[in-house]
Length: 56
Image (tube, rainbow, N blue to C red; front, side, top):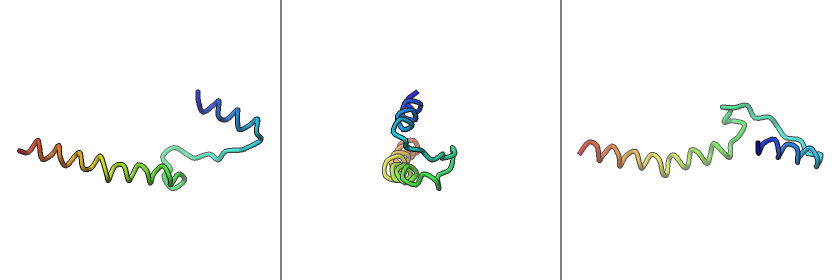
């Protein structure tokens, strides 16, 4: 729903968007960089703590 509103707004402004295929990380580097940093800094650390808790 939000995507349609944004596309209509861009159309009114005369702007065009680029299509990024789902699962194409090389086309959306900013998002993939954020996801990688989030995983490295937060989620992987949480998994280590959970694994240590389970093994003890």
